[in-house]
Length: 384
Ligand SMILES: Cc1cc2nc3c(=O)[nH]c(=O)nc-3n(C[C@H](O)[C@H](O)[C@H](O)COP(=O)(O)O)c2cc1C
Image (cartoon, rainbow, N blue to C red):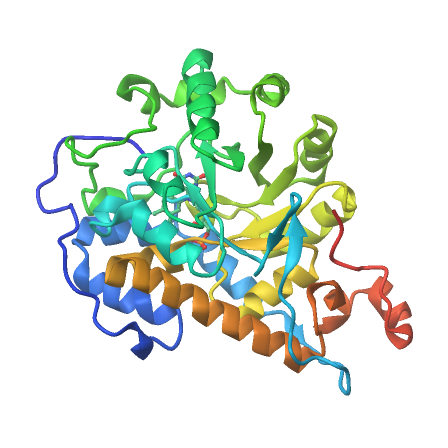
């Protein structure tokens, strides 16, 4: 997130991505991105905080959850759609905010948004994005949300929000898990620097963006203030404690994103898939709940949806896909995840999102067991 001196060779070069149909799993994009990207940029994307325990456990926690299908249910065709904030959402995916995307591919955030638009998926533009929001919302059919780090400068924050809302942004996601920047040894060792010449049309002025003290000045009182400033939907990104989820709902937010920043800030932090059930239970459907971190397969998305997420955010996989093939890569990444989710739902006996709940897990949590025979679980994942 911090900017530094110009680092030669870190800006992505234009290179044709080739036929993306040869990628059959989203993880394959990482191998190819690693080959193509300047090393420092790759390490910036791939790396996590500290010893990277959380980076790994975000993914591994999904692998430790076993699925136990129900059979002989009507599951074809699987319906992945739902209504979100009064609009249809065709598939339960969003693209997470990720900074500096023109370092990964010349199309930058525009490529990501174009890829997402092919599936009706909202793209969340980072406040450290490299493409102005007006260019993204100009893409026919694009759905754009905006992520912001709130700083001490309220005028700047107010102006940023007014600008993105005027451009057609549907929601503002305030990242609340970064009072100070995490230490990411891999990117430090690789000498990652944001090139001085890189355009950051929505970033704070440099002095402030690199000052962690200003991040830490943000508190719940600022959420009240933000609620009065944000006219569109207001979400908090980076909530992991049910008590904070409750405070957020009481503060009038429209949605909660369960996230540990992809393991990039605090190492040994709780894996998001483990934090999700308590938060979903606490929120109880009053507002939608989202989750990200470590989602690499349709089955991972299914597990998060079963544990109470209304939709999931994809981070690194689409950034790698962008690096490999721009908008086509991002679209391929999404199509793989969507198809995997569709198949997994059919195979566990869920024909639509409301069919998903923790009965699908083995061993099922106690409350799900008592409802097992009824086919109607109190641990239903979908409210709000
Ligand atoms: C390269 C990169 C840049 C990111 N930049 C931001 C950012 O600017 N703002 C933010 O709130 N989160 C940022 N994140 C975190 C993502 O929004 C998301 O929470 C995380 O990547 C999800 O985990 P996953 O990568 O395992 O899918 C970034 C993540 C990556 C990989």
